[in-house]
Image 1 (tube, rainbow, N blue to C red):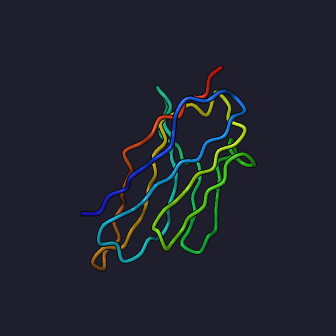
Image 2: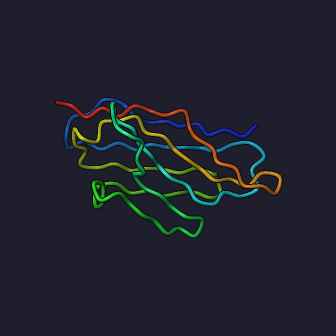
Image 3: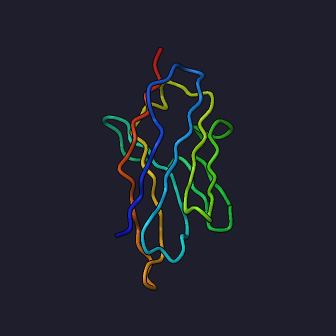
Length: 119
């Protein structure tokens, strides 16, 4: 069964750095776009960063220059390097993957991981 497993997250002070990982497993033929989303209490889920199968990236304005998304296609794994963290980055972070399984494209979500930035 296909699944996404996230790792990373935790409590950090402002200005700190953190790396999130998201590993896809199962009978995946290929992975198309991948992305990181976050949801803070009382707010809607928002796209933080995305990366295509070709490596093109996009970022939310609020994280540009601080966050870097990357992927290792050989490992079906995606990363989010977060630097210069701010309290407003506090949220639950989710990875999202569009994967091809059995000739069909499906949307998968990770279980989420909490990132808290506080002094």
